[in-house]
Length: 95
Image (cartoon, rainbow, N blue to C red; front, side):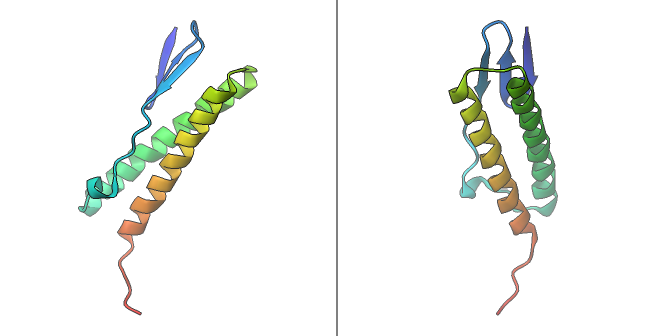
């Protein structure tokens, strides 16, 4: 049985989780406010999905620590990227 959580594919039969690890670079960041807001929402959904996957794997006594570590790293990357995008929505104030 396989389930898709955002960018992670969880396979119960093989006990594997496959995630895309690449986040866009700073050059890829959108400049339109609506695009940024929509991307933030998408990333927050993916972050919540990863939370659910990590929690369920932890509760099930999942023994693949490396896999859990990778999922947690991806979740942290998402959080950092969300913060970066939110900072773009705040106008610069001259000092």
